[in-house]
Amino acid sequence: MADIEKILSELDAQEMSELLDGIDAQQDMLLSARIKQKALPQLTKEDSAPEVREKSIPRIFKIIPVAAALIIFIAGAVVAVSELASPQKEPETTTAVTTTQNKNSWRDNPLMLAISSGNESLIESLLTNTILLTEDVLTFAIDCADFLSYTVIQEIAKAVEKSFGTTGLDALLESTLLGDSEKALKELKERENMLMTPLEKLSFFFSAAFCDSEVISEFMEKGFDVSLKDASGKSIFEIAEKYGNEENVKAAEEGSK
Amino acid sequence: MTDRELLLLISEDKVRGFTLLVDTYSALIYKIVSSVVLPVGTREDAEECVSDTFLAFYNNLEDVDLERGSVKGYLAVIAKRRAINLYHTLKRQQYADMPLDESMAAEGADGTADYETKAALVKAIKDLGEPDSTIVTRKYILGETAKEISAYVALSPEAVQKRLERSMDKLKIMLGGVFYG
Image (cartoon, rainbow over all chains, first blue to last red; front, side, top):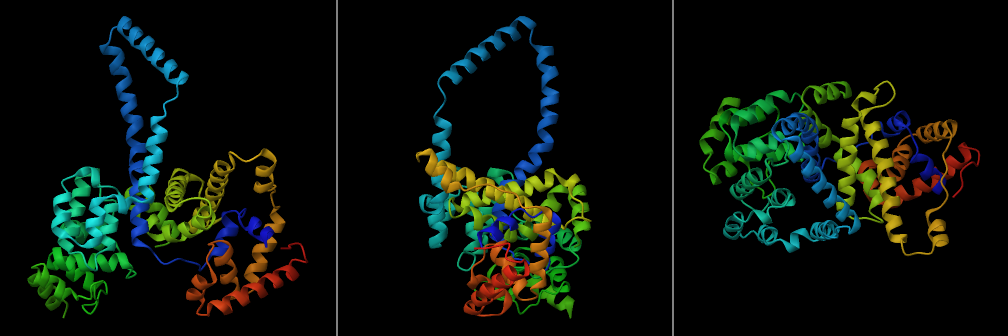
């Protein structure tokens, strides 16, 4: 069957579309978060970089006299030639180390170990060490939501956002986790058809913990039922009670009747 | 959301559109990529390839023609081709110390199927009907095992395997013995 596989690997978009019509895979929130964390910074960097370069070049030629610029150019050329003569090994080593780290990331990272063991006081003390905040930490913590408290996951999200400038999470998931009710409500109102994906359900549970009654009501109006339970088996009432948000959940439920 | 609406969203609000694109299709694209890459690479390699696929789609948005294919179809083609390129790159790294003739034999000959052959194969797979068409597609495009496919077609893994074997025999007959394996 090797020939059939080979031919299937050469299909164009139209042929692939015909075959894949009706074929889907179950959404994987954590995978999606990791992919976005890799791709989004490159997506936003592509727009800003050319503008920065265009602005800086004229400035250099205005500020530095021609003679000084020539000296810098010659010095740069000397450095470049010497680098070509003896290729740097460090980048390869760094890449190798990074690759190794990625392969065994959670085992080598004390913060990941603390998350996997549910040691919340240790997690909180390790969050101050930004070297441990790798891109996998938040998605790993969300994966452990069945035993890790939502407040600890929120702390990790805040630390990641501070360190990387972004959590890399879906906008609705991020806003509910961080308790940004205004942003969460805006996101919800823009989503016409919600499919009750694991990501959306988790957003609902986070909203029960951290958001106001308007957000929780909006979820209910979109079909998120009070009977839904999170990974630890808690209903939204139990979640709200745990995180001191009962009034908002009760108000939302009464409003929906 | 339709493909047209999704493309419009990406052009108007790239972060939100791109996020939705990834949320909707990352699992499917990962399946396509990982089935090719994981035998020679790591999960990290596969996820990098998936990320590159989505970025390549975004960077070539103007070439997407919904009359010729769906967003899913375009993504799948990019993913398959990038995964195969990555497979060869990783394999070459493994073969770096191998004698030249052995590594060439291991890589195999390259060939390109013509348009009629590809179209005939796609038609033949669709003509198998359900669930066989889904089983063959999930096996050879997404690289799923019989056990994984069984969850989608509500058959036992053994039944999926049997149907797959029968489907391949049917394809051989439908395509006049052109394919062999």
